[in-house]
Image (cartoon, rainbow, N blue to C red; front, side):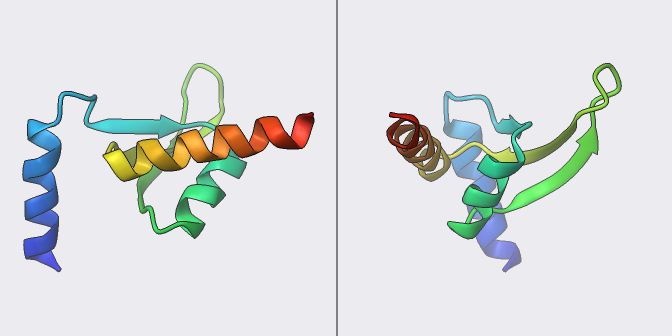
Length: 77
């Protein structure tokens, strides 16, 4: 497993996107985790008191967020 993490870190470093995605939405967090993404840590925003989760920003994560937003829009129409 450690070698896999090191390979992914190398990919993230080459990626021009920000290396992390901070999620403040518990429903999005659940969706991401149910679809194979790993929340590497969580915390509480000192200013707002809101809970957040940190994910490594990957193409797969970006695709899932787009899918979540698209499905969310369908539900509200």
